Length: 216
Ligand code: GRF
Image 1 (tube, rainbow, N blue to C red):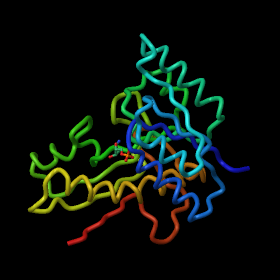
Image 2 (tube, rainbow, N blue to C red):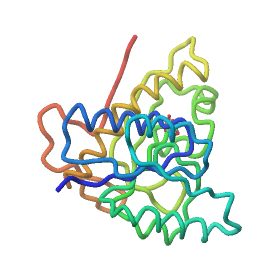
Image 3 (tube, rainbow, N blue to C red):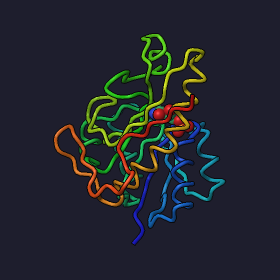
Image 4 (cartoon, rainbow, N blue to C red):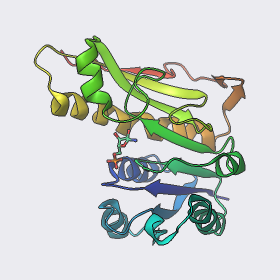
């Protein structure tokens, strides 16, 4: 039976689209069974609908308490019986019971090489800090923000002429390779979590948890 993926978004949804495209191109035995946004304005909703993906909104502003929002979100997700829950630019901090409920089957992508630069404005902070390498991380979702066992990372150089936009674009292009790859490993049941560490079982030749893209 096809594996079932639910994607949570808040914004434009380019990672969601990259996953949908990979799924089609590589003919995974998997399907995106729902794209759920926490706000009706999320641009990715229309893009998902154009691709024929089922969409829903659980609007965080309709709930007075975070627990109530998370309860409603959980109901919406669980109704879709997912094997994997994918946070793709989902801008809400999730409480411990929610995280616990999806432990081992919920991934997030963060636009930095964690544990460097958790939180917001990662590209600006990377430029300000003077690092020569930057990137993105796919990790299992843990209780702390942008924390949890790291599945895979993509690294890119920081170039002399970079501003926030050029650096963000270079990282985003790699996010679109990284997230489908990591999700596929999860769906193939090849990821073993050992404390803070993740082991990839049965790596094929050339397969690595590090994507390195140096376009200079
Ligand atoms: C990405 O940079 C992702 O790493 C971060 O939010 C952004 C979402 O972009 N968590 P998109 O909505 O997938 O285009």
